[in-house]
Image (cartoon, rainbow, N blue to C red; front, side):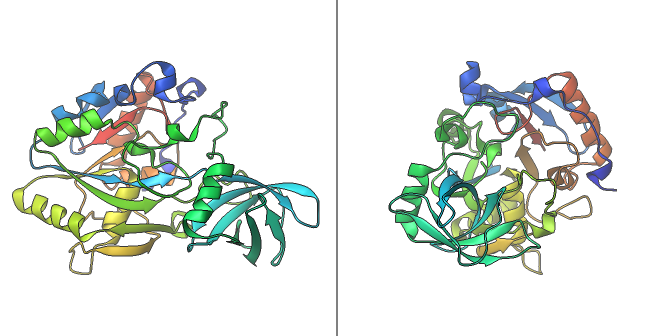
Length: 342
């Protein structure tokens, strides 16, 4: 059974259209639904009370990827035409896969974004929504231009162009995600310090989210086609091993963290320091090797993220919990409320 059968309706008023701070609350004061993965029992509280559901020796793993303003406007050279570009995946220091909105560019065609930044199409495939753009700058020079010129990706339910800072977690450090790794957004430094003071360990991985919002119904990327870059350090591997040895739980903050950690497991079921690309698809048939619990947002009906959640909890229990969340008016999406499955 897959979550293609997990159908429910989220009323429009439950789409979180603005950051919590613009609704007059702190980021760590969003609502929290705690879901027992064995029984399906729920508790309803607020995220700043997370410390009540973790214990000394548990390990939280956070994604340090920083959101880049991935929407760029450029001039199609030779056409005197404006084109919108949405960055999708960084392939190297100057090369990005990108979605060209409402236009088709061929290999060799050029775009100018500013007097300092141009790009040329070096690969185009009619079977893919993306082209490859080789930029005229690389490394920090390219990121400086992207941050100066770009805007955050905004979904159709977001009416206001919120500033980029609203799309960052407090611990984000390495640029690379084009869509916010939103599960960690609710953390404040005060909450993280409180958790550490009570003995909850904190570790970090890096997983850069790619572009999933393609605007056009023509394109639908399956989870297996969604390759994303990740890095797990030796230090984080050591923390995980220490947690396992002491009987603590490993809690992933976000589906990106789950995918990264489970991708780093070798054939003997042992996690290793790892760096690369993953297209790991996790569902109810997946036996999780590393992660015991999950902090995540609320996901849309039939989204592949729900498939991943069923690796933690039976689909019927998940469905009942989501129905309850709708009844209690939890907010959906990146600026919404949070679900702890443990």
